[in-house]
Image (cartoon, rainbow, N blue to C red; front, side, top):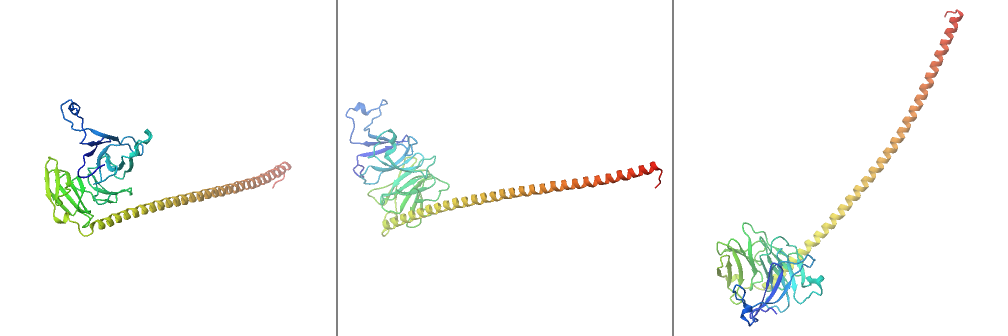
Length: 348
C-alpha cells in the first residue's frame, strides 16, 4: 500500500489525532469543488481518515509524527503523540463498537511521556523493529518487543535537538540536527557514549535532515529560514565497514540483554526491599509484643509490690495500735494506782 519510489499516496497526522491518507491521482473533476471560498486551489482531498484513541481508555490521542518502513506492504506503521509517546498503528484493525475505538493502536510506549512532543521519528532501513525518537535534549532507540528504550543518548547541553534520521547506507549511523545550526553524527561502530563528529551548517536552527535514495554521498539539510543545504559526506559515512549490518544487530541484541538484565536486577531489588520491609515490620511487631509483655509484667510486679506495701502498712498500723493501746492501758493502770494511793493517804 505504501511504496517507496513511484508512490502516489502519502499520510498526514494532526495534533487532534487524525490521520488522513491522501492519493494525488484522484481529484474531483468539478473545479468548483477543488477551490475554497478564498480562491485557494485544492488539487486533491483525503480519501481515508482515522481518529486515534488511547489504548488505556483516556480518550483521543494527539499526534506528532508518523513513519512508514521503506518499501513496506503492510498497513502497520509507527507514530508519536503530542506528549512524547511512541505507538504502533495497524489500519487493518477496525473497531467493532464504540468501546473498542482504540483497537488500531496495537502498542504504546509511555516511558518518554512528557509535556512535549517528539521532534523527529524514524525507522531503521536495515532493521524493521528498530525505531528512533528524537526529543528536545536526547534521542532514544526502541525495539518493538521491549517496553523501554534499548539505548538513550546523553543529554545535550547549551542547545536542543530539532530533527534526526537513520542513515540509508550505514546501519550504525544516526544524524541529528540542533537549534544552533549544527549536526551531530553518531557512529555506533566508533563509540556510543557521545557523537563521533559535529559540523556547523548555519548559524540558526536545523529543521530537517534527509538522505538521498540514489546519491549516497549527499545529505539534504533544511534550516529555519527555508534554505536547503546539500552536504557532501565523506567516504567513511556512507560506505559500509565490513559486515556492519551483522555487527549492529549484535550491538542492539547486547543492548536488549543489558535492558533485560537491569529489569531483572530492579525486580530482584524490589523483592529484596519488600522482604526487608516485611522483616522490619515483623521485628517491630515482635519488639512491641515484648514491650507489651514487659509492661504487663511490670504491672503485675507493681500490683504485687502494692499489695505487699498495703499488707505491710496494715501490719504496721495494727502493731502500732496494739502498742499504743498497751501503753495507754499501762498509763491508766499507773494513774489508777496513784489515785488510789492518794485517796488512802499513802505516799510513794
